[in-house]
Image 1 (tube, rainbow, N blue to C red):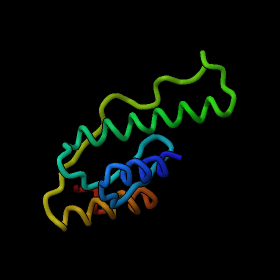
Image 2: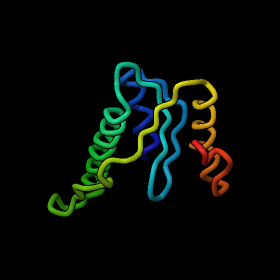
Image 3: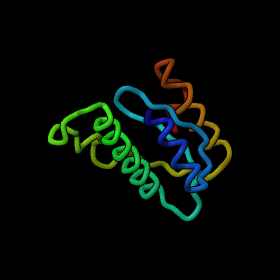
Image 4: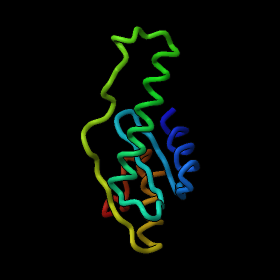
Length: 108
């Protein structure tokens, strides 16, 4: 669900989504978002995701007093990429390395 929310929000903002890979306990996103700093991008994606997850709980009939308000940990890492090699390594790591238990891309 969160992957589709990330895709939708990036499209809405005209951001270039290079990779998204949501795991059971975290999510990797590689995005180019001109005129936004990484923290703004992270916070907006988390906010949009939270809103959609709360909507989903309501659709499933969860009582309002039981709808979760907190879905994410505070903050989250943000890395800035300044060249094509870094972008390629980050995209590969986000898309593939998580499934094989890591790789040399861990040096990002």
